[in-house]
Image (cartoon, rainbow, N blue to C red; front, side):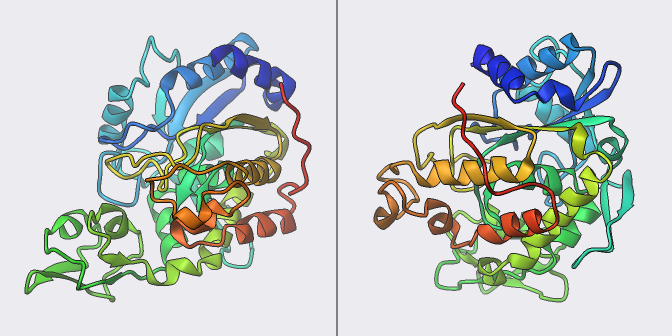
Length: 351
């Protein structure tokens, strides 16, 4: 795999995204403690090596999470990254949490778009000379699938930025499925959930729409409600990508790994079974085309039986992405193309 990454890096001209002496942010996801399908640190290690060889100054980075977990603040986040192997000498680059100790270290960038007038991104992202976005492609309850745009826009959003991207969503409790275990109460960052009569109750006035309850519940007792029609949330992620790339579009590179494609992202504290075989790795200078290609390749695969993927969607060509979380994933790509972030048309060149 490291040799293949090197070939892709060269073929996609990722090295043209930075100059000698540039501070190069390698945006990735270190994985929530308890999960095991996050990207192997050896993949990032090769990218670090290639950047350094060309004279760049690479650092690994991500922003803190909105929900309560192992990456809510920089101390826990750094410990989680280290436990997952993102440490010297496995990866020869420092880890810098983009939005600082408690998620308050962010830069506000003016965008004046449909949903956001400004975007609030981790300062390390704003101040980096170049960015290489290294993504693990998998399912996602808000965007259908998590690829380069989800990794960049949501991932580099500060904690207050993530809140802004999530606020269109309000979950509801399915009482017949709720076991009263209290996991959602423990993990709710807005303290909006209580147990009454051994059933969870969500106070709408306190709910911040972060999705932690949906991810945390092991009994599928949380109905995402508006999340199944979430075009506005996807648009906000695109607008955050727009802000991050503003003045930096030619200083961006994207590498996406379509391996261990699980129903949810790498934020839960466990890993579900992948629903398709591993496909491979994509590299591009175009954030829209790489996500479109990733989605097409995922849907072209034959699905695994006995997974979250319904049997009616196992055949190659079926829309597995929409089937997993009942989310239309196309609005994000359409809006990104509309804003000029890239093109949905692409040529797939095998290396």
